[in-house]
Length: 274
Image (cartoon, rainbow, N blue to C red; front, side, top):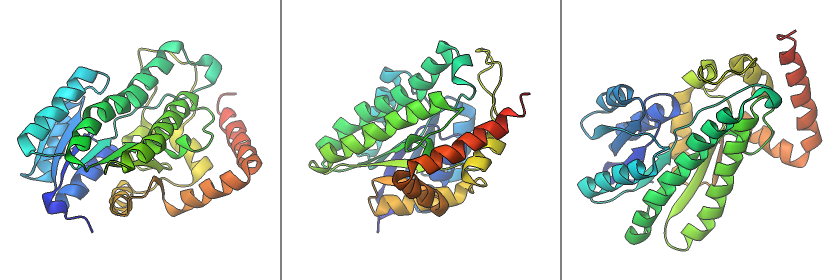
């Protein structure tokens, strides 16, 4: 079992959702946590909830230099880095042909480049240490189809590919890499709207649509606890909850079945537009 009392962790996108839940769960175990987010007030609030071994930092993961500086400063203060949770992300939904290029670029900038910036900042530090664990948040949409969420799926497939590839390289040098692929989790992103500055004519009701595809949203606290347990076991691709793991395995064996179910869900959701 991990001796969390001695552990240090940086969490991006820590002001809400999975990032907040992970920060709180690690803090309860005694770890030192740096909660980062573009929402600095939110990050400060979460750090206060975590206790006196937690701190907060303003961080826009799209800025490589800022990510580098943030992680290096934390390591300088703590002396080492055990975990990096590349968790910051956004979703854009709608019909692929109606989503402007600007929206695709924003999703890629945050969900892909943001993860890459974290990896390029933390991985060299962990190589020098000879240990460390990078956990990149992807999604069930990163290991299967996600219609009406094509930009999100594109970005999360990229995160899965980066993570599983780096894991093999890193293992030979003492560094671990995992990728978190949850189904719908009870977080604010389920009720979030598309970016207001990039007009998209129509989007599905995300909560309703994802519930149709993958079942009721899973409690974020349970997600965090199961994630940390999987990290302790050094699981490569962390798919949760259990029903999502089953769906993932079935999808790998019977992709046509998943396609059929997904087509039906899309058709049902499109009725709301008529």
